[in-house]
Each structure stands twice: as structure tokens, then as C-alpha cells.
Amino acid sequence: MRAHEAGALHGDFGHQGPSWLRTPADVNELMAPLWPRTARKDDDGVLQVGGRDVASLAQEFGTPAYLLDEEDFRARCRDFKQGFAGADVYYAGKAFLCRAIVRILVEEEMNLDVCSGGELATALAAGMDPARLALHGNNKSVRELTRAVEAGVGRIVVDSFDEIERLAAIARERGVRPRVMIRVTVGVEAHTHEFIATAHEDQKFGFSLAGGKAFEAARVILEQDTLELRGLHSHIGSQIFDTSGFEVSARRVLTLQERIRTELGAELPELDLGGGFGIAYTSQDTPSPAGDLAERMFKIVADECRGLGIAQPHLSVEPGRAIVGPSTFTLYEVGTVKPLDGLRTYVSVDGGMSDNIRTALYDASYSATLASRASQAEPILARVVGKHCEAGDVVVKDEFLPADVRPGDLIAVPGTGAYCRSMASNYNHVPRPPVVAVRDGQARVIVRRETEDDLLALDVG
Image 1 (cartoon, rainbow, N blue to C red):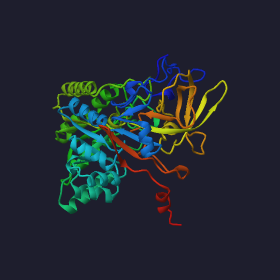
Image 2: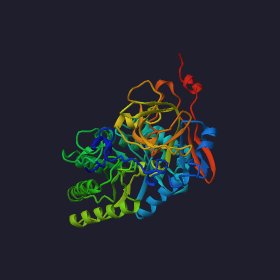
Image 3: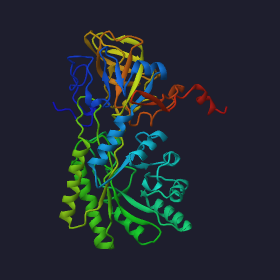
């Protein structure tokens, strides 16, 4: 049976694991598409990244830890910049953001989208040109909108009539005319998990296309002179491998653009088709290179504009996961090993759902490897679980690990750059791990490990 593109939740399962999971010929081997570009194992089976081995990194920085391959992150930025040459590429900051990441984006001449006051503050504190920022969000506060306007954010993606009214008032008071785009809900449900599909009608984001609200939003904005309407924005979901959803979305949003031109007399110069490009978490995932995505999406827009007889707008895209996701893996230390006869072996590590909630929240699938040594033992079906007081505290649902996996071993889980640190919590009062950037044999902490003192500092009782 064909594995479902959205992940193991939708796949066919065998008796003990998903049907796509195959017993490896060599349990020590890395599957290259899942790992950062500099990741490899040495002759002793120790995982290396950025010229450093994980054993020394664990000794220096402790575990669990997110290890970011800085060269890989930069290379993926360049891939999207080159692939989408002639378009604007906005890194989706919600995937993972800190000041060091913003500085890298500045150096790589990337744009950045943010969706909260905190993300905006981080971008500004790290020196991002406000003109290269986009602000998203379905419920932006007056304070957030005010700061964006006063900072000179390049564009604000409006999401409701209430927001249009608030933003217009702020702009009028300050005598400025901020650039805006309208987020359009196009009724396309991306090939993905229900909770991360964001463009079907029954959800909180954007103005409905089918209900006429998106057209009405354009009319309201164009009838007053305090906001500059630059174009339309559509985002159809996350972890998408098939561009057919983008084709439907582009057709619908460009049809609206043509109606705005015909009935309201406005030729909108920009179009943003969002992000959501998928990455490889397991062997079942087959993401497309940035260049291939760009070629198909440029063709989609060109064909639709030609058919509608309208000028081709300037395109923007917003990759986040596709850049930072594969660049990072999480390093854990094994604490206990518990074989369950006839089922699988439970391998408990020193992190869990506080540093990666995605498995519990989305039933997401991940892979893992023994990272601190080579093993000659046969592969066994394992489940990597965390230390939290929760039965659903699972990091990797199903993976083959060596039968001799034991306490003290290091386990690495790839593909954790996106949404893991961003969605991390202090569940059970567990401090969040650090993010360590590694490049050319040098490692530096870009987000430090939380401590118990940090936890207690917020407790004013």
C-alpha cells in the first residue's frame, strides 16, 4: 500500500509498526535526506555535525540539546533564494526564531515573517530591517499593530474587519500609510493533518473567498486612504508535498484579484502563496528541492494569469520548516530500556514532550539513530519515549534501534528544527533544552538551557 504523504497517522500499519518502516540492512547507517548536510558517522559510529562529534557536544552542553547545523541552515536559505529568484522569500519565524537566527537571515539577505509582538521584538532587537518584515496573526492587538506601524514593518497581512478598522485608525493618527495584504481563505484543504490545515472554510484564519468577505475587505481598504493594499495572501497548510493544492489556491485567489481589478479598479501588484513545504521526517517522506518547487509554482502563477488575462503579480513565499527543520536534530541520553515481549522495546530518554510536543499533538512521525557508538547487534523495533508523567509522552513512535541499546547511549532524532523549540514547554517543571549552533568545528549556544532558577524566578508565590 502507498504511504500517505501527510505522515504515519494516515498510513497503513502492520502488526507492530507502520507498513512503510523496513528493517534496515545496517542499523548504524544514516538516511541522508533526514539529516543536516554535514551530518555523518565516523568509523566508530559516532555522529558528527559541523565538524564536531556528539559525544563531545553532549559533554560540553549536556542533554537533551537541539543541535543546529549552521551551514545547512544557510545553504537552505540560499536554495530558496536562488530557486525563487525574482520572488520574495520570507522565512517563517514561527518555525524557530531567536536573535542569532535573525542575524543569519540578515546576512543571507532573507526576509522574515513574524506573527506576534514577541517575534517582532526579536527581529527588531537582532537588527532586521523592518521593511523586510511581514506581520501575520488572526488577532493582532492594538499594541502589536502600533509597534509594527511605528517600526515601519514592510507589510501587514490583515485578517479581519476589526483589524482593518484598528490599523486604519493607528495609521491615521500617525499620518502614515502602511502596506497591507489580505489573507484569503480559499477553501483548499492541504494534504496534511487536520490541525495544521489552515485554508479550508471552517477555521479562524483569513477572509472567506466563497462567502464574499475577501472581496468586501478589498473594497473597504480601497475606499479609504490610510492603508495601501498591495495584494492577496493565501496559506493552505503545512507539511505539503503536492503542489496541486497551490495550483487550486492560486487559481482562486487570482480570480479574486481579477474581480478586484474589474469591479474596484485596482491592479494589485503582489501575491503571496504562503509556505508549508514538507520535509522528510521518515523514509516515507519525499520532499521536492526548492528549485523544483519554484519552477512549478512560477508556472502555476504564469498559467493562471495568462488564462485570466491579468498582469502577473510579484510572487512571495514563506518557507519555515523547509529551511530550519532538517538543519537541526535533538540529542538525548538513554536512561532506561524496557523490552516488552512480542511488542517492542521502550527506550526512555532524558527529554520528551516538553521539547517535542509534535508527536503527541499531531501524531507526527520521527526517526532516530544510536549516535554515540556503532553496534553489531540485530535491529529491534523500539519506541523512544520521554521522562514525563504522561502515557502519551512519545518522541519516536516506531524505529529500529540496535538490540544492545543501553542506558548512557546517546540517541539523535532528526528533523526537529521546526516547531520543537518554538512549542516547547515546562511540563512537569522540566527546563527547556539549549539550542547549539555548530559550524566548522565550532559550537556556540544561541539559546541557553533553562535552569531551575529560571523556573523559580517566575514563581512569585
